[in-house]
Image (cartoon, rainbow, N blue to C red; front, side, top):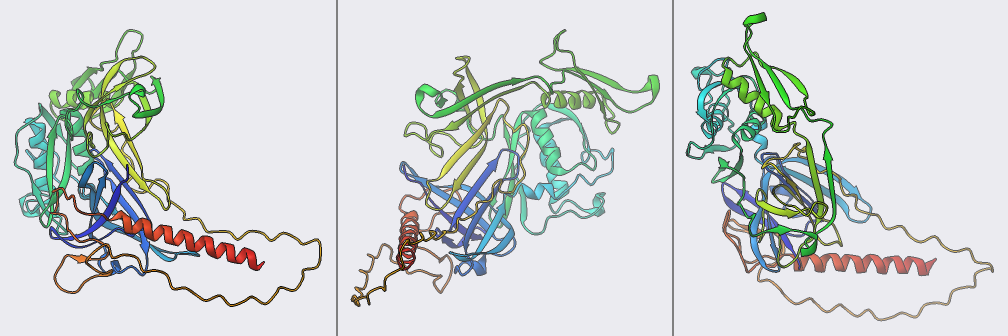
Length: 475
C-alpha cells in the first residue's frame, strides 16, 4: 500500500495552487481540539509568495484502494526559516485547525445575562450554537450587551441550523473561554463539534453522539485480525473521584449545595471533591457541573496499541476520526466499543508514512493536546567518513584519464503542465498535477502526486551517495 499526499492553497473556496514536493509533513487531528498541519519546503519554492499569514491550506491523501479525500485543513499561523547544510534554506509552516478561532474568544457577557451567559432548561446544541453566534460572529455586539464587539473578521463565520439535540440542562459560563466552554458542553451533552470549510470562511457544526459514524459492528481491532500490535492494558484508580459536592451561591446554612455521585462509587471507593460554583444560581446547574466533573475524573482504563494498516482495515476507507469502533482486549478477551479521538500522520524523507490513532471510551479526548508538532524532525546531515591513516608514505597518484561525460537521458514527461506557477487565472500549479480536486469534499481518482516526489528524493539520495563516494576516493 502506497499513500500519496499533496497540499493545496485555497482562497475563498477556490484552489490557487497545489504542490507535493515538500521535504517533510506532519498532520494531527483531534475531536473537539485544535489540530495542525506542519510542512517544510525549500525557501526558494515557487509557492512561497502565497504562503503568508492566515493562508488556508488543505491536505489531500490517497492510498492504493482510496481515492483522494480531504484529510486535514487549517490556516497558517507560524513560519520559520532555517538553513540546512545539504538542503540549503528551508521554510517550515504550521497551519492550525479552525477550532483555534474558538480559543480566541471568551463568553464576554456579564453574569446572569439570560440566553447569553445564563441558560436554563435548554438543549445542549442550542446553548453551543448560541454561544458561538453571540461571541464570534456579527451578532457579538457591544451595543447588544457584550463587553466588546467580538466579530471574528478574519474569516466569515457561519453557524449550522439548530436541530435542538442533546439533553435539557442549566448552564452558566460568564467570562469562560469559548473553546473550553464548548468542550465542557460536549461532555455534558455527549456530543462533538467542528469548524468545517465554508465558502470564504468556516461553519460551526454540532454532532450528536460522536463526530464520526458508528462502525462498531463492522470495524474490529484485534491481534488475531492483524491490524494491531504491541497492545498495552492498564487500570489506574489513583486520580478517580466519585463524589462531587458543588457549592453554589449563599453563605452558611443558606448556601445552595448539590451532591452528585459518580458511576464508579462504592463503599470501598468513596472519594470526595468540593467544587466552587458561585456563578451558578440553580440546583440543576450545580448538578450538571458535578456530573461533568465526575465524568472527567473517572478511573482511567487505558488500552493502547500500534495500528497496522491492512487491506481489510484501512484508515481513510474503513474508519475515520471520530468513528465508533470495536476492540478486542487480548488480556481480558472482552470486546468493547471505543471512539477514535485523534489521528496523526507523519511523512519523513526516505520513509513510508506513519499513521497512528488514539482511542477512548468517550467520544472526546481525556486530555487535549497542544496544537504544535510534538517532535520536530531534524533532517540529518551527511558526515564524511574519517580517512584511515596510511602505514606507508602515499605514492603519487596517476594523472586521471579524462572520461567523456555522457548526458543523462531526459525523464519521460508524466504531466502536461511544466513545473512552476503558470500565468493566468487560478488554480496555479506548482508541481506535477493535472486534474484539480473539487473543493472541498469531492473524491478525485486521477491524480498521482507522489511519483514525482519519490523520483526527486531518490535522485537526491543518489547524488548524495555519489558525492560521498567521490570525497572518500579523493582522500
